[in-house]
Amino acid sequence: MTAVVISNRDTIRAAAEQLLTNLGDQPATVAERLHAAGIRGERCNEGACPIATYLLRSDLGLYSVAVSGNIATLRYGDRGAYTVFVDVPDVVEEFIYRFDNGAYDELLKATCVRCKASPTLAFCCSSHNALLCHGCYRRTHFVEVCVEGCTDCAREGLGVVLGGAR
Image (cartoon, rainbow, N blue to C red; front, side):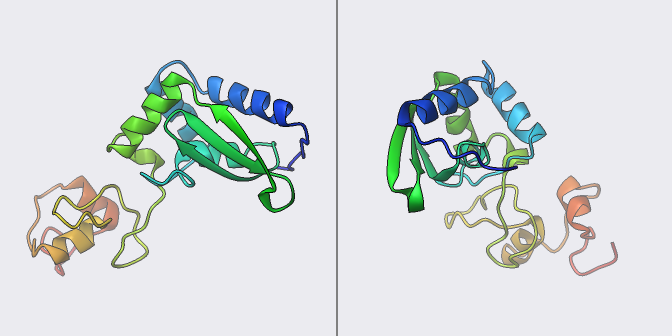
């Protein structure tokens, strides 16, 4: 996608607000449209959440985006020299809240903190809140035998018995 540099602050604000409004009128619709567009992001990271990624990939020529609550801070121009603040629609704010609190795993862009390769679907449930793939979770928590037919094991190519046949 070729970036079109828009120099007028009001034009950038209006275009960004329109992009956000076009995502839908329900949080699930927002998630579906982001997923269909191949947008991914990180939980609780205002500069790398799916909404920030979506705006960065737009044709607005943005340098950086940070989405916090109901405000998106857009930096543009030479090395982000200029800033514009955009109101985030309520439905998009609700999407962000749900995403940050565990919904819409299909939009996650994260890697396991241990193996650095496997896609991670969630935080580890223990007190350290580390992003772990299923295999590293099993190793870290000494789960040598998993449930037959576990979809997480199947997705990661793990056997029922850790280290055993797949």
